[in-house]
Length: 261
Image 1 (tube, rainbow, N blue to C red):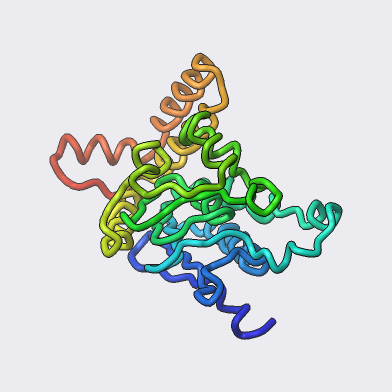
Image 2 (tube, rainbow, N blue to C red):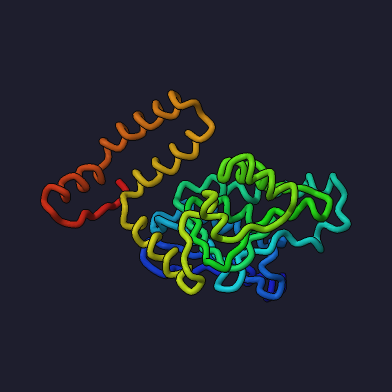
């Protein structure tokens, strides 16, 4: 592996309890090469079991989030090769990460970049960001959740428009449509994402994990089934020390200290 390949994904810890993954292929607008996807998979697998990490920020930096897949690796691929790459297995650790993931988005989030952003739980976008599923323009279609996650995020009408025309939408349109959680000036994206991550990292980890799990599972369940999951998850949390600490701290008018137990 070359030095450049080794550094396509950067990891740092900007604050206690917060890990930040930065896509680092600036010369290729952070195109999602197979090596970059592999490293994302490995890092999310490791961060999932790291008890010191309570929230993860995923970003492409201040210029671009990710401008799609690496077409140079797909141009001459046949259907069997595409199938046998099993990119769904590489993305599974991101999809199933139990910890909150915050996407900090500047510039393009196109194709696979938009699909990657939609794997996050909270999306913070700069005013100059744009989102797009342009695959139809090169004769294919979204293949890593770009039809299904987009549908669940923005509804049928907007998802159809984006996927069938391949035209980008602005960050403001994405925010109004419900694709984006926070819309801020471009220069404030990283700090806003860090501020949200800092707040979440101070919350009780067990409660945070249960909230994320129940919301995601409830999206595809009937209301009655989802409410039953919610009730049982809430009841389980009353067995945690963090529940006792949180309520005691509230009554004593002090800040709680949560340890994830």
